[in-house]
Image 1 (spheres, helix red, strand yellow):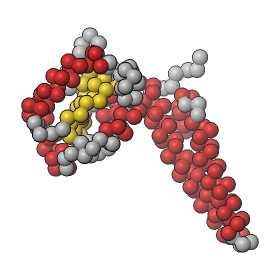
Image 2 (cartoon, rainbow, N blue to C red):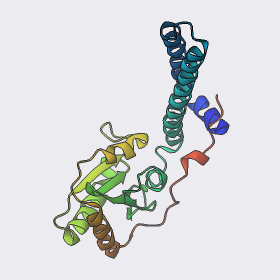
Image 3 (cartoon, rainbow, N blue to C red):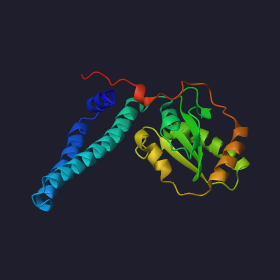
Image 4 (tube, rainbow, N blue to C red):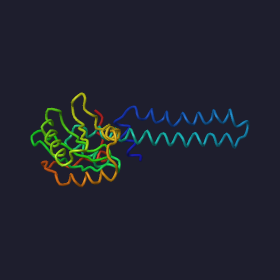
Length: 217
């Protein structure tokens, strides 16, 4: 936990003030509520303060977790295989995804990843829109050929202005409209295995929580 905090503090300069705020504010509210409502009862005052402290610690952990994930992904954003890290550790269990891409462009290392969930099939293009357009079109045709009635959504992660930031990719996927149920997700995933993974081998997705923060300049 301390290592995660140190990594987050180095990369995200706003994390520490925010964490202190969400820790201290509930404690102050607990003290205020205790003074106003305890009517001189010391035990009630102490209980209000303890409740405020516990709430502050809970909020602190929530903020730390979210900021740490964002800071960690920022360390690998733009690297080949970065989307694979989200596929490996950032998605909910309801998704079926692989950290290895299903298609890769050898020269630019632009890649296409595929995930299956209740929204249907999601293709994630890693790289600029120009580099990934042909790969996306080919993969969309392959999926539509074996699953003509399943929705296909394409998301882009890359340098383009309208691309999805890496740290927001999992959240964007989870917000997609549901189209199939859990049993259909399993059936679609099994059907897609027949397509295989025809991408060129590239390094597996980096575990963002094992990336060391760069030294400050």
